[in-house]
Image 1: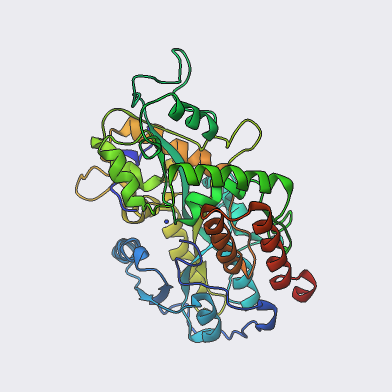
Image 2: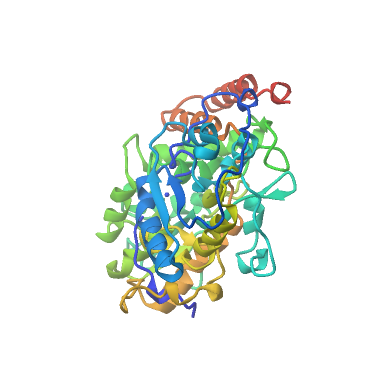
Length: 437
């Protein structure tokens, strides 16, 4: 059993956008800052900025424990700027010593000159984290930032059958091998589509996964402003997604809260969910199951979408050594608090968790049995390892906005081929590679 799994209490996903980061222009016109080391390493007060109120509880708890253990002060500050990263870039040495960011923002951060390289040593190496974690930090063969945690989508299902005409015969697994199979199950039942399958109709992560496997963007390194967004595979995936959305959503708006409420009431068989749901599902009868998202059909796959939270040390900080100590503490010792307060699973390997992750005053962190939490959370870890992440482009948020609008058009019944051709044309106009060089 994982050391921290019976300790997790919970909350509930955003990316650069969650931190208030919106790429509003072509970053090659922005100049990196010039830093001057004006601080003193023996000054113990560090400053840490963040752009999303959802991160406040995690930071407050981490800072409190760190200060109690080291005597060093850390001041946190909410920065509600539309371009949060750009705001840090303009502050030079007057900015924070540390700040939260998403892995997709690394190119922008590095170009602005506000990313200190990860302080890797014998006590802080990739093998202390989940497989592939350090790839999140990698940009042009260097590593930047300290990994905290992630969110990813998965399929939640109930192990009983909602009708007396189940399509899954005895001896077959309960988990469907494709969304097409879920529709076959629906057709063999006497329940409505909204009792069979639901997901958040507006959430980017919940919808992008239907297309993500075929949305080729960022090049092989994830850092090149190039994309193929009108391939035949992507068009076919878009057609399949459109049919699913029109069948199960029927033009209605469903929030994540709606989906969980329907499942909790026993009115839903399958749902696309996030890891935070593990803190809420202890009373949801009958017995639950979790699995990676199934394929679209026999020929088209689905790739779960994930987003990862990092703590960055500012290259312009005059206290980088002290900032690195805090960043490593937050990365390794405070991981479970990120789940408890934010619903993001930690990227540090669970055996690395210290007593700091054991909850407060004997509280039980997970509201489901520890062995079940271990089993269920591992599904999300496996999904994360094969998930699609947004590319590390300076203009990633512009791409996200374009794709969000594309998904909306598909749900509204737009011509699929024309929609992707328009998306490709818009991307080429906004993100021309030659303009970036």
